[in-house]
Each structure stands twice: as structure tokens, then as C-alpha cells.
Length: 293
Image (cartoon, rainbow, N blue to C red; front, side, top):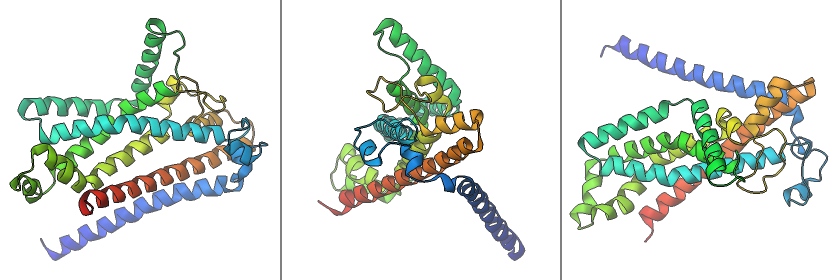
């Protein structure tokens, strides 16, 4: 490679990185400029006492607290459902599937990843209607239906990242435990998965972000503008993405629009905390799996 071509590639790489960083900084800076003034206890709790709201003694009807709780429950349930299914499917694809079976499943997972979220939302709504008609009249679009639909939506991220993380491990790592007499299952559990946790967690982080921000799915499967705290998994709920969409499309004055910007900042903060929590879990699991008996 010539020196001039190497310099050109380096300059282009730096330029692309600067543009990307500038775009992200611009978006975050704009949100902070528009919504920073609304941040405070009143945005979350309205006229309700914060301590009583946090202890669930009083309902919050004029703040974002129910939407924050609904968003957290939605993400935790969706990712909690998707992780076991996605990881086991990824392990199967990487370690057990061969030949035509692997090609067929790879095609199916690629198709699943390309399905628009609105179609998944319609699927969740249809599921709620089917369960309402054939199993129980108490089943409607709800937090549980939204969680199942979002879990279905993010499965390809977890499956593919798990599969790729396992398949890209060095051959020496794959064969060491087997050479010492470990079974294939023991090798997967005690060596391959711990070694590939960083790649697997990247899929979990993508899933968390998608669950926290998707509006099309939850609009059709149970979210409402004002529901308070969800009483059960089969109840309606509030969520920050829908609140932001609702306020931005139907705001009555500048103050309501500013609260939408504030909600966007709160949503970004929740995602950042969840991402940090995922990294901490990954570090802890890697240490326990690799360095402690």
C-alpha cells in the first residue's frame, strides 16, 4: 500500500469519526438546550410528594414517574424473555447446527431481523385478540403482550451476536478444554461462553436500546397516554417513547413541548444506566467464570 493511500484512508477514518461524534453531540446538545430547564422533581412527580411516589403510596398523574417505571418494566421483561431464548439459539447455531440446517435457520433469522417493528406490533395485537377470544376475556393488549412482542423483535440481535462471538473464538481456545477431557457441553459452559461474554453483551445492549426506544410495537400492544402504575402484567401501562411521541404530535403549548424534550433526556439517562449495568454484569460474570473456582 502506498504512503499516500494510507494517509488518505487514515484521514477519511478520522473525518468519519469526527462527523459521527459531532452528530451525536449535536443531538444530545439540542435535547439539553431544549429540555434541561424542565429537569427536576416536578417533571417526574408533578404535584405528588417524591418520597410517597417512590414508595408507591400515591399515584402520580401529572409527572413522568409512571412512564419511567413502565419503561423499566418493559425493558426488563422483554430482555429477560429474549436473553435465554436468544443465547441458547446462538449457541445451537454456532456449536451444533451444520450444513443445510444452519443455512435455513440463518435465512430465517435474517428475515426476522428485517421485519418492520410495526408488523411485529400488529402481530402482538393479533395475539392479544386471539387470546382474548379463545382463552380469557380478561386478556387485552397489555404490558405482557408488549414485552413478548419486543422480545420477538430483538431476538435476532442476541442470536446473531452470540453466534458470531462463539464462532470467532480462536481455535486454541476451543480445543484446550476438550484436550483435557471436558465434554462439549462443559467446554461451552465453562470456556466458550465466558470467553465470548463481551460479544454477547453487545447484543444484549442493542436489545436494551431497541426495547427502550421502540414506539410502533407498544402503541399497538398496550401502552396508553395516562394509565398510572401498572397493576399487573395484564394491565395497560405508560412508557417514555410513547409519551414523547404523544407530546410532540399533540402539544398545546411550549411548556408541554419542553416536557417532551425533558422526557427524551430522561430516556437517554435510563438507557445509559441500563448499558452501564449490563457492562458491570459482564465484567462480574467474566471474572467469576474465568478466575474463580
